[in-house]
Image 1 (cartoon, rainbow, N blue to C red):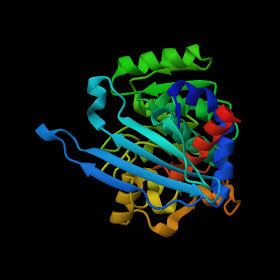
Image 2 (image 1 turned 180 degrees about the vertical axis):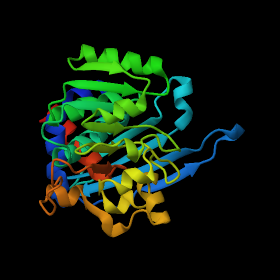
Image 3 (image 1 turned 30 degrees about the vertical axis):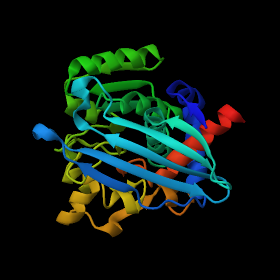
Image 4 (image 1 turned 45 degrees about the horizontal axis):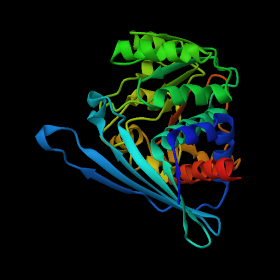
Length: 314
């Protein structure tokens, strides 16, 4: 069985190619059971960790499962919150083909899913991106959005301003002008796209800050008790999700408004299956505010793993 490193994954998964691989995957007949989600208590009053098992298969072609742990306090130890591996099997014989480093795979496929959504939901001339959060997903989200929209300016906000400044320097060095900001409200109001990737348990983005034509991309807050945007953001927006089954059960940015009656299931306009298959057009006007919540889907992992395998082994 082949061992594929983070460096090999990063080299194989350029964002334009990965976005298109996900677009085709959401149109396909990949089978994805509901993922296993297990919260694990931590001693000493620390926040719970989570174990995720995410299987998927494409009949006769490939089978894969991702094993992931999410430990919200890892940042204090200078470790990524997300750790994991991906195992890819031959779809016909069941033979294990590859053990793939999953942190990079996950970050890239998650960012590419947001970029895929933005290709339908963000205005085509979007040039200003505000990144809320400075974790491992932040640079991936910036680069992925820049692969589908003409992003020329990035503003980065984080609770740790030093981290935001360091990330801004990294992004500027990559060729996109970036700056750190301590004023989240101003950063949100001036953006075309607002992308959030935090572990916040309280809303950070207020709907009252949103402007006509903006696209709000919510990637963090992966548990039902976490949230990145408030009720007004729901009220003022057209709501889209990566998958209806996952988003209505897992992420607080959808689960909490559903529980309180701020949002009804029928108010969700479409998911990525419907968008990629042309069953919903996505953005309907230049003034519409669009709201996209992603919780992740094993289809994305399998598509990314297959692309890695193809790029490395032909």
